[in-house]
Image 1: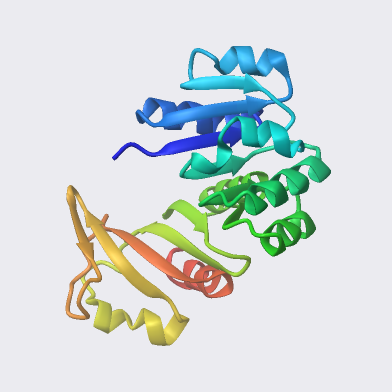
Image 2 (image 1 turned 90 degrees about the vertical axis):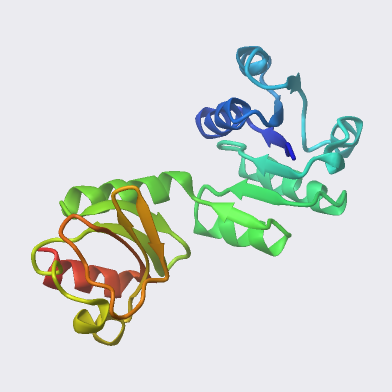
Length: 219
């Protein structure tokens, strides 16, 4: 069933979400206080409107509580971001994702009821740095301030060993949650599963443990 989304703030981050969801065939309402941005996305989103989302009446008039998911992607105006999130929560919006400018902003958004808080600039910087630092790390996704999921290409040190042989959980506190092998994906692989060269291991764990594993095994 097609979901409905509202994206508040059509800057670089909100705009990319709006475009991607629209390309996926979702119903998307784009909202921004800037008329020029709204005009830019009027042909991309299902609907695009100019509106001040710190005004409860504006959000009510848009029927915002009827949307499955609202993304607060307001850029530099932290006060507007917080106030908009608070109003959305009070109006009973089912799911709210909010963009945070910094850790303090993120904590406030969580306390006032955002279901998910994202730090796009920080997360992207961390992801790019990890990819640059290691030839074996394909992708990096931050789950929390201390835990992440990484995609690692199996090198010669890993190849030919079973998961039991490597004992990554005991040695590093990490879990291999899946293995991509060509077109095949092995979810929750068994301890006896042998790792092949160029397998992509999807590993979850504490950032410090991932870093330790990279330095000892992936160099």
